[in-house]
Amino acid sequence: MSLQSAVSSAYDVFLEHAQDAQVVLFHPQSRLRSVLVAQLFQDPNTQTFYYALGENDNNLQSFIEGFAHDMATQHPTFGRHLYMLPYELHQNFAADVDRVLDTIVQEISELSDEPFVLVLDEYDRSDDANDINRFVEYLADRLPEQCTLVINSRTLPRLPWLAMVAKKQAVIIQDDHLITQDIHGPHQHENYNLEVYALGPGFVRLNGEQVDTWEGHLPRLLFFYALDRPVVTRAEICDAFWPNLDTDQAVNVFHVTKRRLHKALDLDVLLHIENYYQINPELTVYYDVVDFVETLMRGRYSTGDEQFQAWQRAVELYKGPFLQGHDETWIVDRREAMRTGYLEAVMGMARTYVERGKGETALKLYRSAIDEDYSREDLHRELMLLYNELGRRGEAVAHYQQVEKIFNENNMTLSPKTIDVYNDIMA
Image (cartoon, rainbow, N blue to C red; front, top):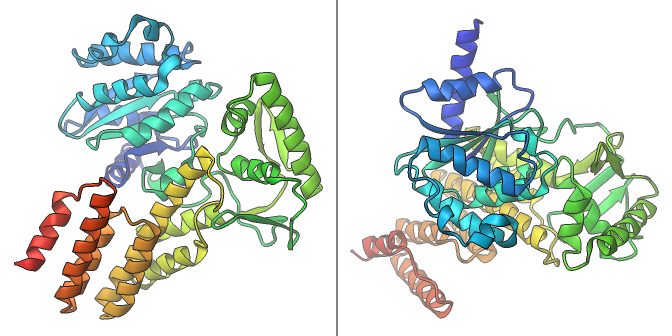
């Protein structure tokens, strides 16, 4: 295949899957990463904005300043909200990250009302910048719907890719194919030293035996945290676990916790390699979250019986909320992502049952999904429509009235889309 044909094929794959997510990562091993970025500018049907991180982008301050400067050269009004922030905040954007994030999101949303691509190139320059990675992670959750963020990097960015893929926020592309497994690297083995289950209360098996010698919950949670990303820094760990301690205290507690983790597993599971902590690469680890996310991907990109079996497998893997019983911020964030993936699988199964004429079975699935997340209006709409399709209009109406009552009690407002479904049923 010629280079031109390879680029064309890879670009078609990008265009196809960019519709499914707001963040697209060109995999570090992709041979065509930079060519694809160039192709974006050559496509007359794609509006593209571009920022390449520079050698000075090793902290949030420099990143925001450089990003705003380069965006202003591409869109004349970019930065007008940012420059209205207080002088003191301009001297230290880290002093109020939430306010800066809100402002950057506003600036990005005003780049265009039409769909556009925002490229962050040479993203690996931020590898050692915890604050930049954290900012981009939060930015990904707040992007305007018309924006697709493309990340091009020589290394796998330290972002929570499993969670981002689980909630259909991100896709990873390597040349002309979508990455659907081995997001953090190869992990399929005939035998596993460690089996790790985070969907539910969370537990670990070592050589088939459940580990129960943790000496508190922190060593166990530290292990789960290390599995969450390809690599993590000590500063990230301390910020997630002990944000209220000063640096020296947090570091001391971290080392005590790490020693207890190694003692519980009777091996050095968390290694410090090239300034990062990561799970010992010599260990074979089964992680149910990886299995769950890869199964979701199979469900999304297959059809027929294969798709149904994938949805069914994903539902079986979901034994409960991620690390149920814990409420640390990072756990709550991952819990929401995994719940979103679970509900996608449940809805996929329910729709298949409807197609097969098994409406009652589908009703049970929709009810179980609603029990998992009552705020999801799309689930309520699907349930009402199915009730109506089965000739149970009264139950559809009763369900709507119950939802309306509960939403009102919680100061929530039903969307026009849900109200329209109700009005159509009543017509």
